[in-house]
Length: 533
Image 1 (spheres, rainbow, N blue to C red):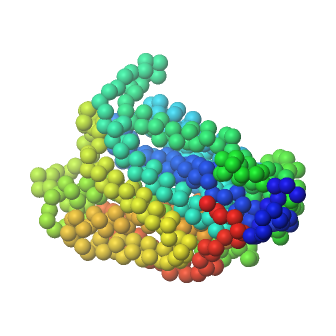
Image 2 (image 1 turned 45 degrees about the horizontal axis):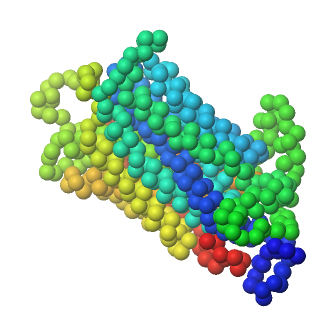
Image 3 (image 1 turned 90 degrees about the vertical axis):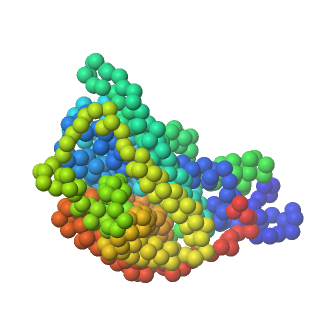
């Protein structure tokens, strides 16, 4: 038979024909253009999430005059995107597991850009708050589903590595955030739009720029197929084989003969999804949809998945509590440390420090809506750039070693290092060292992708996207709790803020030991003779 696949080394011209597993079939596609393209797009989507959620922290200080925001309203605006993500995570997880990964990712990317674009024309606090909520609502769909989408284009050997590669691209995107903010926001141009009675300033353009990655990624994925594993689990074996053949053709630049896959072996997991597949296709009406969502979600909170779900949810909550919650106050605290210019001071003493000339004055907040109020101090960008550089380099290192050392050592090392740094910030009184400890504390975000990679390994295809969405929903809840916790305690009990953050991370390090199968490392030998590269 011409163009047959040699699954194991055979003498020349001897054909070897048999059914193979989907994992072996994905190995035969080799690792090439399709994989790299997916990794880059996935990383860019993850960066878009950061731009939509944390990019607003650069806007709030300079938009306060245009939007006439109080301090309380600033807090609401900083967390409202996370609220949108939390509210929608369950819905997107259900749709991704029942309707398809791509059918969720592409539309939500376009809708996210639309909300970001329209929000740049907001003339008051409530309008921008509603639009930022919906930006978070829609970006949630692509941010969680992209992990499953990318992972299902790779075999087990390269799945975690591909996700960490996307995280490296995400780190590069994060690295660009302070640079983009500096070059866009710190401009002095402005023009009036008479129809809406609004002055269009650089911070408004920054919101549009933050939405551009979503638009670009949505366009990039338009011609991409659904994940081969998802369509295979939907019973569409021929479509899965066509996608695998398409991947092989692009990865080899058409220089090799077309893959002639006879058949892909049915897995137990595929049989288990057959009933759900039929039920999902016949679902009509709101009540029926809610019932189906419950049936899709309930297994995650029953044996044998309850323990796994609880662990990954708690871990993501603990990570986001610090990585996002503490980040919201990162520019403020670091600038306070830099402003007082003292040789010895802890982070909390810097926060509480009041200059002598203002000590006897009851100062609440002075709004000077001049040209200078439309800019941010250069130190904010410098410290943010260092943090994002640490993330980019860290993700690169993790991506290189994750298969060799396994996920557990990485989780324990990062959790404990960051947790200890947070606690030390309470006592260390060398300003330069305090800032570095703060930077290390915030790098606990490394663990987000590692936990996501572990989550994908723990759950079957029909529950995978839902499991990731539920865990990230808990994580985003941690962001909201963390930001509000810092806002409430920073002035009244600053030391407790860092103690809670540090202790929770150390607790997550201990909990990592209880992730099922976390001790296993990824086998480095390919399962078939065809190289993955």
